[in-house]
Image (cartoon, rainbow, N blue to C red; front, side, top):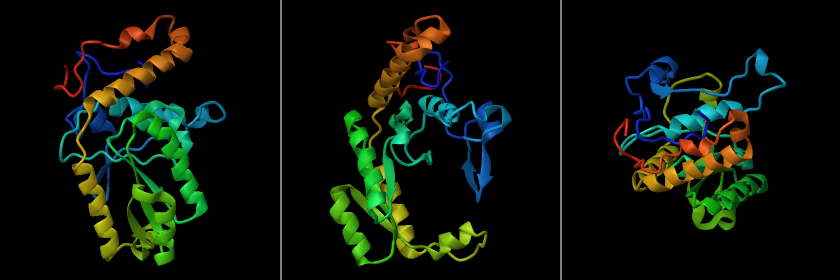
Length: 234
């Protein structure tokens, strides 16, 4: 299998936090939230493997995941165009771009938006570390209708990052998080688009390098009769 291998009839598909060996082995808890982590390098990787060799596992996992309404899988990714070095950016119903009210923060958003719109990827901007009305106006001027909501500078988050616990997240920031969840809930899953992108990027990788490495045509891994979003195993 490649990181891009799309599911097909007979594939072992996963349910979020399902009763399977992968989740049993790799899911931990952080503050009561189920968490999986990728990206660690060991000694044999140093100077040899790139970060995308680690992200391939995430792409493969999401490509074989059957999550439904009321189930949320949140993936924290690196910022900027680096996300487009693989097909991982196509694996989501909605991408939230976090942008601080600075020219640099907005430039990252524009770079991502310009690549994403070529593939019909839906993007919403979340302003971060907004401290005053001028910050918010700057984001509105630069981002326009893509600005969904914003977070204000948070003493609670800073304390948590320093290892101090207690208190609650500020009401405005709690409201912003609710807006994110409501926006995701209102979005209708497009299984056909997700599968179409999976097949497209698999064929790209097959032609670019994987066929030569495998010694066979990996386009044969695409099942033309597979119905995306079906029950596990079919």
